[in-house]
Length: 337
Length: 220
Image (cartoon, rainbow over all chains, first blue to last red):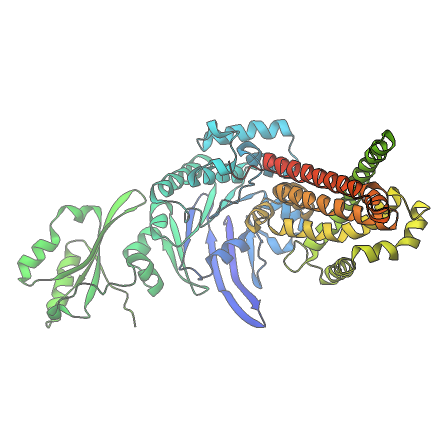
């Protein structure tokens, strides 16, 4: 049984008499203990998707099953109790500004009727988990963005949830802070076995921590799979765009103004060989490197390069064959129409 | 002009003015605060929109607030007599003051609650908070500074209105100003009462600003 199962989910908003389809027949399942990324451009419907998982947004059609329980079958009260099993953090942190750190963390416990003394003890444990023991009495306005998100994480964990939803949780943070928050999420996932669902528009977030990823484009599920698979061989346009970026239009010299662009991915084993240099020496033809990048995917380094190839008969095919023989993953790039 | 009788009269005036102002503020909030919460909750973007209830509350607030206080004061004389037993004196003045203040307070409360960040409310919902818990544990807590500032403004307003009630025998400093300053041409008395009103107003406003700054944890 999957921890989270999203079945035929459709969400339609009525805006001034018009129907806007935010989500269109989405099917997903997230296994227990997974870190699952949902990525999409802004407006793709990913925030709506995550908000249906705890029924902050009720689906127009379809159902959400949490550990096998269909949320639509629950009464308001049962739903509120169920939500204690689903923690949530946000882009804007959403802390209570008039309460200090420890009271913020105690807040969900206060709501669930836990005794104050017990709540305090639990909150102090959580402060240790998120490394903020010295900020117990501070107010949110005295904290940095990263610290606020740590408090929010501690707060989300207070009721011992089985699932943690992250709605663009790192989008308001700088790269270093993003890293430290992602590390913390990974730690929590490993230590507590909690299932994490991450919504983001940043591919780096997905490649850093997620095991599985789903790509949402225009309310539809474009593609899903393990992060490795999707990074190596993205098939949907949305995935290609998110991985390699949209505009690879810079540089080309006149003579290289060709449409033949390929994307190659270096795995660990191929990263030691000077494959590109050898290829140029072998075919005695210059090629144009449009983009080169290295990424950390679940702890292993992956190189990514976009080349534009000469359009001479057969030469491009030969080159692609050569690269494949050398253990590289070669795919076509996303073409803007 | 300044004899012991005069001093006693002024002191009693101050006492009555404070009695009317604070009394009507307290009773006004007992009625206005829940009404403001109802307006917030039932409004379009509220926790539990009920357009019908909102429209009724909205209508009542607008009607009462569009009647000038002096006219309301006279209009309510039978009602005041029914409740207090007489239509003059400071206790009687509290009735129209409260009727005038409650819708105003409701509006002030509604706008304070509207200022609370929607994200915080959403976070509370995600934690499994009920609407009642959101009102008592999130809205009223997060909006406390704004609510307190609103209360300071309301108290200042009611101080002014309580003085106005002097024209129909309401008691307090306003009453003294009308009877002595206006009818008897005692300019000195008029100036003293006006100065006292200014001082009381300043004390209320400064105290309010000070306290609302003290209880605000958002910036420091």
